Structures are given as structure tokens and as C-alpha cells.
View 1 (cartoon, rainbow, N blue to C red):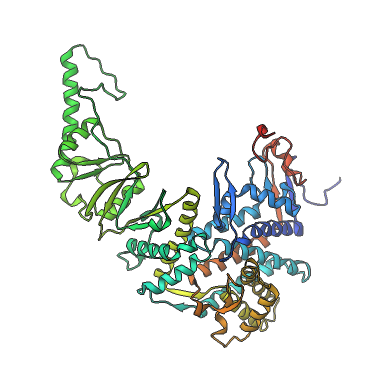
View 2 (cartoon, one colour):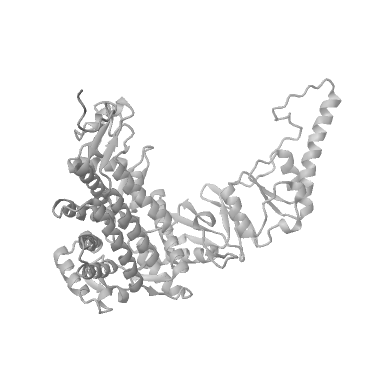
Length: 570
């Protein structure tokens, strides 16, 4: 009897399998390809990416998360430049990322943006560089991936401790200092020319929506209670933060016929006499009048509902001098409730006097451009707000909104924690110098992981120098010499000026990063690299025969696939 010498795997015909060192190197190569895409968008001298979405829209941005979320076509072109087959990293039928390591990097950027609101580019660049530094440990030092991963996690614990030692507290009650920090954040964005205006709006908005919970903690929910309304036209300088809300909904005007309409419900009613039909209409009118009477008796002057409003109800309410807004989103209704102090009521016959919102001082309707907007202003005690952005085009407004969202999250992080780190790559160089010093005292193989993490951290200042056209070798040599003096507190603040490429004291230049953002970057990047290194077997199955062309690794798209435009382009 013949026995098989190895394990037998029964796989489908189009299933591809990579094992051992080949799988690890493929994951590293895919991660480096993703990191190289967003590398040029780091720092104040960053470049913009122009992306075309499937609907024909154009996205102009230097935000790492937006680029990786929208740039499937850009990823394919980059794979061709690297000489990597499309089947290695991408699935061509839907033009989406198919390599698991590449998907992990994209999810890494997305989670960083959701958790900290900033650093989505840095986390991808750092993770890709860390995996690149791991190649020497795998091939030259012949270290096991599990040993490297454990060393990475130990280095992460020490790096977080060093960050806490380097951090400085800021007086969050001093608006001028907080605005200076926000300006440093926006200095790397497209909207840097309007950084003073956007920073002040972001700080006011975050202070407005901050709320003290019964447990003593401070809650700042930007996603729910701070809405950004983009209104094309005008200039960015006309943007403002409303001390209240703005709703893009039409106010219902009385435009109903002077005769009763037929029933619009789906119920079937048999009427044999004219009196029965008249009684049916009278009953409907009485029901609607009873609903409106409860609203009128409550003393409300503005009614906002998530549902529809019939013509008959409009008649009764407008006759009583009550303005009505219908079909408002659930999220908008919650913000209105928080801003005005009103309680959302499900039945009109259960309205209490305490359910009415009395914190709104002014209700008005304005026409901006071609649309009508409803304003609920002078909500001094409410904890919800709206930021109105004006601009010449939708593309500019979309990018300014992305930059403003980063500023809002940075302001939230500062108010919640109040600890800052020197920017410009100074924190990375200081942590790298301390990790190298710590590696000298480690006798085990983990010292190689410490050195790899230290070398990977240098990618941030090196990228800043590259993007502004400085002499990278000279800048990095001078930086290492400065940060070699571990006891010098001023040396730990030396970083790269992202505009000139010169070394300068980040504390004197007022360039800061949030401690919470840096901690999240280090955690996400190092943990993701440790996980990807432990993968030694990759099974990728093609579900449709139409994807076979992309799985051959020939570096080109399938013959029947249109990569640009369609067949009408010739």
C-alpha cells in the first residue's frame, strides 16, 4: 500500500496557495505597495491625489484614508509600475483590492481615522516600513516570525512609555494655545491657507457639543451632534459656526385644494350612499383636527416631524400660526432635540409642557443660492451645532470638509487628554534613539526587533524631508546626532521643518502632535505588522471564472475588461 508522504489538500481548480517564506514576502510586498501610494501625501509639502470614482466624480485630496478608500484604479496602476501581477494584489472584475495584506492596510487606515480622527497616512507608512525592515530579520538573521512579533510587542510597550515621558501638558482653557496646535495640524492640509478660521471654528464647535456625563466623564460626539453643511458659492472666509442648527429642508406652505380629496390609504371602503361618504370625510377631518388641536394647545410655534404631514394638517397648523417642517432625518431630529432641549414625542395626545424646547431663540428660513435652509439659532444652552462651509466649487468644499473633520478630532483629543508631543518627526526620532539604547541592554534575540522598530520610526522624518526636496542623507545624519544626546530635553524637540527641510526646535516653532493620536498610530502599525508576519499560508480562491484573467499574474487586465472609459472611446 502506497502512503502519501505529505498532507493532501483538495482545492478548487482556480485556487491559489502560497506558503512559508513566499507568503510572508508577498504580504510584505503588498503592504509596501499600499504604503508607497500615500507616502507623498505626508507633511505640509505633500502632494494631492486626483481620483476618479465609478460615477465619474473627481476627488482631490491628500487624506490617506480617503485615498485608500477611493483609489482602486490608482492601486492597479501602481501595481503595474512595480511589475507586480494584478492577480497578486488585485481582483480585476470589480477593480477592488483582493490581496489580504493590502486589505489589512486599508482597514488599518480606516480604523485609525475612526478612532483618532488623524494620522491615517502615518499609520500606513509606518506599518509598511516596519514590514520592510522585517525582511532582513527573516532572510539575513534567519529569525522566526513568532520571535520577531514578540519583540515588536515588547518594543511597542517601551515606545508607548517613552511617548508618555516626552509628552507635555497644555492648558486646555487657553483658546489661543489650542488654536496654535490646531493650526499646526491644518498646516499639512490643503486648507492650510485658512487655518486660522477653520481652527477657531473647530474649537468653538467642540466646546459647544461637549457634555458632562453623570459618571464625571466628558462626552464629545462629533459625528452625531456637529454637522457640516456645504453650500457652494461665495468664499471660504464666509464660512461660520452657527450657535444652533441649519436644516436643508423645505418649510411647508399651504398649497391644498379647496375640496376634499379622495382617501389615499390602501383600505377598501364600500360606499352606497352620498351621506356615508360625507361622514367618512368628516371622520377623517375630525381625527386630523384632534391631532393638530393637541399640538396647538401645547403652545408650540414650530413643529418638526420625521414623518409626512397631510394638507389638512397643514391647514389647521398654519391657521394657528405654527410652522411645520416634515421628513427630517432621525439624526437631524436628535441634534435638534439636544440643541433646543425638546423631547421627541411619539403621539400628539401625550404632549407635555416639559416636552417643548425653549432653548432656541430664533427660527428663520433663508435662501442661499437656489435652496432654502431652515435655521434654529441662538441656542445658547444647547450642546449641538452646525458648521456652514462656503466655497467656489464642490471639490474644494469636499477637501476643506475633510480637513475640518481632522481639526475637529484633534480639538476633541486635546480637550479630553491635554497632552502633546513635538511634531516634525521629533517624537519618532526621540523614541527611536531610546529604543536603540534599550536594545544594547537586551541579550536575547528581541534586540533585533527593537532595532527594526527604531529604524522604521525614522521613516516619518525621512518622508517629510523627501516631500519638501531636502537633502535626506544630511538631514537624517544631523537628526541622529542631535537625538543621540538622550539627557538633553531640547534635543528631543528637534525635528524637520516640512516646508524648508531644515532642522528646527518644534517647541519653539509650535508644531505639536496629540499624544493619543501618536499612541494609536504606534499601536495600530506595530500590531498590524506583527500579525502579518505570522501568516505563513495564504489561500486565495477565485469565485467567478471571469476573474481568471486577473489571477494569472501577468500584470495586465483581462482582455474583455475596459480599464478606462468604455468601448465607445475607441
